[in-house]
Image 1 (cartoon, helix red, strand yellow):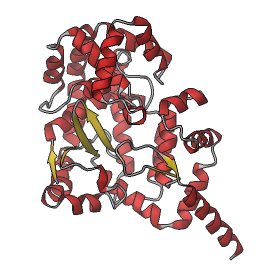
Image 2 (image 1 turned 30 degrees about the vertical axis):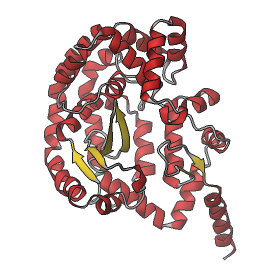
Image 3 (image 1 turned 60 degrees about the horizontal axis):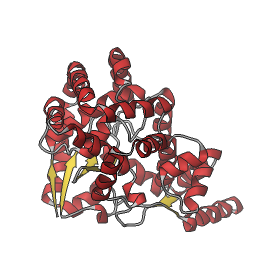
Image 4 (image 1 turned 120 degrees about the vertical axis):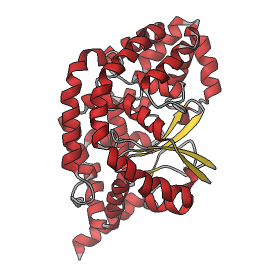
Length: 369
């Protein structure tokens, strides 16, 4: 087993992700700090500095607010942002800046770009719907000739109504909008570079604290760096690694075309420490579980998961909320281990009834003692 750190690809991922900070609300800040870093030691993670970084970035990005709405959904989390679809359709491997990456895509045939964007939408929940890349591409090619089917697909995407309309425009004229997006990224680049400079030292430290151990001793180091929270089963013989100072506390497996990247956020080492400490404290864990179950909407999401409905799109449509909200609630359940992902690549969620029963029995015993 090997890890390969893609340093320049990490920067490209951050360049494309950076504008999304504009849509993080005060409520998102509150949820993040309350749930993820409640009581974490200051020397482990400087939450105040991270929040200030986001607020400063938002202030700088306000100058680009109107044009950005043509490419990013106006919500904190969205799988349907234009750059997200582009990365799913065209791997970032070998690219370190937006200009060369977007120019490379623009060299493709326009019909092919349309097909790839449609396929990217189809594969967003591929693990749940069992749609592989080849099937998605075949279906996408058919949809190019079937406007009604394409319209149904866009209308079914769990995003804002305004952004659904924008998605259709992006697919109809991808090269035109790619050129506009490329120029917009050029305008934003000086702002991005200002913050990149601030995190340059930490990015260099990341190579010592994360990359080198994973290179020298992959399995043992991965277990240590994730505090044994992430199963080794998700790893392959060759693993492409990227990091992010924009999404500092995110850990994800990202499928970019035929490449599979592991994203280990710049401060995720402390994120996993928080999760491990959280797990060790049973009473705190029970309190978090009860808190996670105290919201009526969240309970509806859990009821759907318990019935085997694991598609975020299906749950969002059934309850009448955004997919971002469903994802937020599912993350809350994962953090508290109310639900779990079997060690399989389709990564469906199942409710851990044994854990819930155990929490309830322990709670009763504590009250009696």
